[in-house]
Length: 258
Image (tube, rainbow, N blue to C red):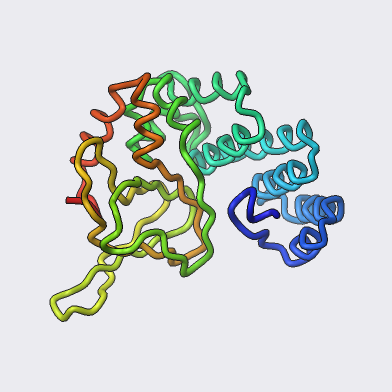
């Protein structure tokens, strides 16, 4: 049930065992003990607690825990991971006005957060770690986050294969993805690895290219996904979105596409 709702398996065996039995209270207690034992990973454990509370039907405590985890991630400068948690919040409460305001604040030029060397503007952080987001307006970014999905994949999972339709753009929130293509010998060869904050994939409003590479996770990864269908929905009220995306994709060498 856990993986069905949130797309991944819990990574702690005691909590996994409890979840398999449907004992959400015991799983939450395991995560709370980990929170006390590993304060440096507090953002992760608050998130796991929130996700498990959601499975247990405890909506408000779940939202409180997820918000706490996301805010800790922001404080640590892990903005893409924070966005992924905010997307979980949206799945539980699609009408959360506070979250919409927060997303707009994150997109605003004057918004600030803490970097390794002190305060930085969030838009500057996005330019450094995920330049795509810095080119959208506040309203556009909020609309995009509502439509994005977050994929949680273990090591060795295939994201897409060579020859499949190229209709998704990904950003690595956490982890690493290896891209392979056929070399002159006809055998698969690794072309590159994509790291946190970096994009891969391709979407286009009009063309229908195919993937020229195969993408496989080389570590357990969390990927932010923007599909062509989702972007069409956003573009219906924010038509500039496709222009920004196509300009952004033209600024780097797409790993797939025509």
